[in-house]
Image 1 (cartoon, rainbow, N blue to C red):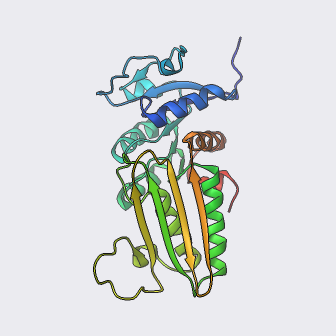
Image 2 (tube, rainbow, N blue to C red):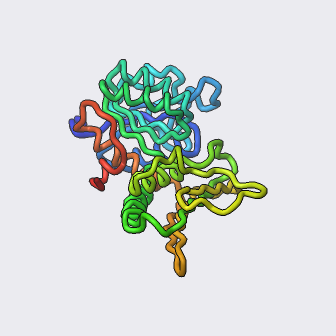
Image 3 (cartoon, helix red, strand yellow):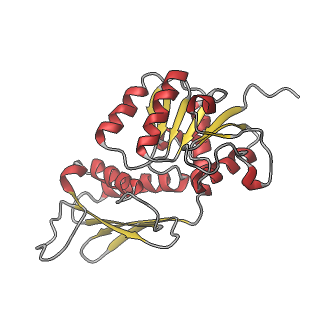
Amino acid sequence: MAQSPDILKIAIAGASGRMGHMLIEAVRNDPMCMLAGALDVPSSPGIGNDATGFLGQASGVNIESDVRKGLQNSHVLIDFTRPEGTLAHLKICRELGVKLVIGTTGFTDEQKAEIAEAAKDIAIVMAPNMSVGVNVTLKLLQMAAQAMPTGYDIEIIEAHHRHKVDAPSGTALKMGEVIADAIGRDLKDCAVYERYGHTGERDPSTIGFSTIRGGDIVGDHTVLFAGIGERIEITHKSSSRATYAQGSLRAASFLASKKNGLFDMFDVLSLR
């Protein structure tokens, strides 16, 4: 039977990992998507295996370390790997005209500029968290900050599993950026990431971050607006990476009609 021309052909980076498996399963369960490629590092034991073998199914798509080969039949690459890997994939996506959904975190400003430059040629959605719920939470934080620009101390507390290598999380930093922008501050100037010893009184213009790493916590984020006589806590808790996978597919579908440009989940979800 001929495939519908509307079927979105998706490749997954980090196909042997936990998030890779979640993304592959989500693609396989979506009737409007097709798994067209699977990538992993050359040292991965999954190289050469069928990408859906972990599901007890055969897809005919093998996990490749050759990026060009893995992308040759794909419209979009979804990448939740490491900054260095994502940037290597980015170069080849740009060459091949493959669109890109980036869920990787931990980029430097220079690396973000490199992604923005590539977006002149291909369409990219980049967000530190692809969860629909997290991005609705970001919108709520923006509204709260605009309504309470003074008189409230702002603290961001995040918790993730023991294997997460960057801190604070990209989601926590995005929360800080959204809040700072809403109240006319620059997060680079007002963020406080560490407190130890005699710190003196809290500077009311700062935004504080606290990081917890342990166990198998998927991702918890709480923003505290502490005023005199009251406090507001806005919290999002993830119990499954499936939310990130579903949001990623929405981002991939959003890119189907875009030729180039750099977008985020506010664009995907019409939250501007």
